[in-house]
Image (spheres, rainbow, N blue to C red):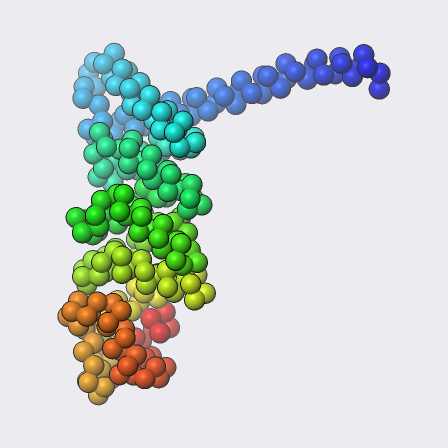
Length: 262
């Protein structure tokens, strides 16, 4: 190929490449705008729908905050806007939603997932444990600690924790103990989803023991109910179970009933 023909081909390729970049940028901008308008339609976001100009300015202001958070975190603005919608729909105050999403996005980067998944998991935790969860910063710290101490990720924990939010707080288990239990199971080679399913089965069997479990517990002289779990904590309760059962799998099967719990 001659230098001339090569240069001509390059010259022809440049406008095509530029057009592709512009098209992609335009689509990204339109996607972000659509996401922000979706956020704006949520209850409590805009102060006055009847004034189009005021509404436009409010949406622009929210968009500016999201873009600033995008620049700070390196996460696409469209993704942050979708996470903001998730946060608001889960009860996060509109005024706090961008900061909430920005913090979640940083945890998402470290946890191999997206901001929306972390927001979903964190809001589930905060709605379930309420004040005892210690706020968003503490929740994210606990999830990252579990990631560091187990063989799991913040993304996996955020996606699975909803299976425990209905039982663990009800039984008086702290967020820290619940996450530590899941992390310990994963550290021993149990996948995160199976660890959560197994712990859920344990809690379910304790909160409503079967007739067989109640008889076996009585034979062992073991307090096997929600009150015992609340009094001793998860580690103390399970330690008592292992001590009284001597780790006998047949005995444990009678107590926990399910393969997951066992």
